[in-house]
Amino acid sequence: MITLSEIEDAARELPSQVLKTPLLRFEALSKKTGADLLLKAENLQVTGSYKSRAAFTILNKLTDQQKERGAAISSSGNFAAAFAYMGTLLGIPTSVVMMKKTSPFKVERTRQFGAEVVFCDDHNQARWDTLEQLAVDRGLATINTWEDANVLRGHGTLGLEILDQAPNVDAIVVPVSSSGLIAGIGAAVKSIRPEVKIIGVQPEGSQALYQSFRQKSLCEVDEPNTICDALIAARPGAAPFEHVLAYVDDVVLVSDDQAKKAIRELAGDAKLVAEPGGAVAVAAVQAGVVDVVGKTVVAVVSGGNIAQTLLGEILRCE
Image (cartoon, one colour):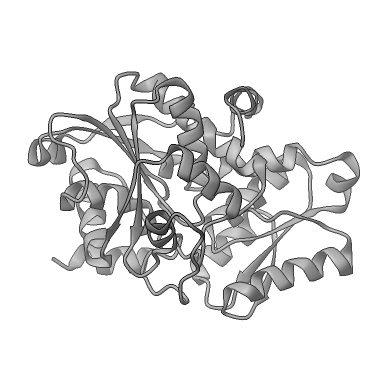
């Protein structure tokens, strides 16, 4: 289990390129829901998502020899872009394993930020097999971002930032894929204010943590089927799941249509661009699947990496 002091150390080491993102009051949805709803706008990070925190932390902790040879991860897009950007910043060659079905928009962003993209077949096990082969063939330092403790420490810095900006927060609502973000936030926040509720949100078409949380044991689901392409982990990471059981109060589900509605609300009323996976926390508040009346609630807008064509389609549909 990671500790508060480890998260605090990670926060002190973050470079200025990792922004202290604003916490914005969402006036329109606050009035509709009876909550004081605040948006943690991680979509405004340089690479468009919260992943830059963990990407820097894991790359910065590599040995000098590992930094020289290069490092690799597998990602559906947001971690890939952040890993590429931070690798360029630190002068470390980076490679990212992506499934062939990955959004071309996210593939191109990853390349633009400086990483090599290595494609694999369109199933989760192929990601790990390809990553392992890169270690064997090329001697790269390969990081399983579902399990690495430095990922949790980096993500935990977001929890510290939220408490600094909203010390009286009652609940934090967090998008969930492999569970690293909610694990890190939970560890940081509950260590300081254990009464704050930590609530995870998954799309109905990708609910591995939802099922695992209810059964109190790791579950793997069929290949996810959702528009929320940033939230497609077929199972939670084992290390994050330990933290989830210790720190998370509930996990809820939203539909793809609810995620799309949240994107429209964020664009229209909050003037923020969110991708489907980045909008699910707002969708959960909007849909009433979390108890927010009379409470100060932070919804993490975890990413804004959405192709313009898809954004246009969503905004045109009511």
